[in-house]
Length: 359
Ligand code: SAH
Image (cartoon, rainbow, N blue to C red; front, side, top):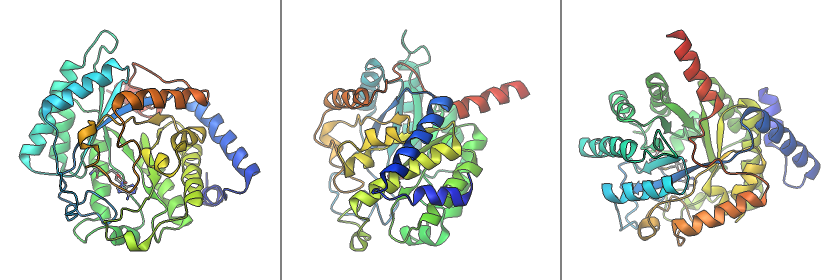
């Protein structure tokens, strides 16, 4: 895939049905060949909305004083939810939160991972739940501690690889170079690394998105999670608006297909933000080559406190309701769920095997 080919794919408009059908077919073929047809679940627990950062786009950023219910779930609440996740056959868990770098927080997460690894072992899941972390930028020593505790995947979206755009989205203390160096540390430590971007940001061009995909490829990442940028009304970026819904949806789907064609054997998530645009948004993502989805397990009483953007779906639903609904949605498009498995990407497995051969 050249930059020019990527730009061509990303430019397909929602009105060009024959180009769209062709793109879906190509992305689907690569998906089937490289990662198979199963859809893997990662139950996500948004365990704290306390955040020390101030990203201009995000609803839970530090200076949003309208978020009055800042919460952190107790260890027991998280473990109970994780065991529900295991018993529902979801083989992997994502622990995501706002960003804190203080020692009490890191020790809390470290202890949590160790307990989860131990307590989630079952006959159906002999190694326990797969654990993915999304707790933002940390120093290498901290990442190492979290890996030693038993986490094996890490998600850190780069958000955009365009330096000027990155600067517009964040306070000056947050730097693109720092985020890239975090991704390098995660890889060095041996995590399966996931990254991604927001799509349709004010000031973002198709060329920038094509460069983002080339960055994913050059960084040799194992997992991709991308979603449309959706305005949050209490954010500094609110007055800049957002892309028109239909065009934004198509651009997001084109991104998924382009990443599948360019990176081939990685896991690609069909994210919740797609569903915020259209009720069937996640199924549509799966039809463009995505193979992972992340059912929300955050307890109902705190879900409203984790609104990264406006119109986040399922804030009123319980995890049981989400489970039924999602299974129906996936089977409706003729796909099957890969229950009771970690569902690592073939890309990551190959690297692990190569390392074993070398040593
Ligand atoms: N603090 C953690 C995770 C929380 S935010 C971290 O930095 O990794 C998780 C993701 O939500 C972000 O990476 C961002 O890409 C996305 N996000 C935040 N605000 C958003 C918005 N307004 N629209 C769409 N996605 C958003």
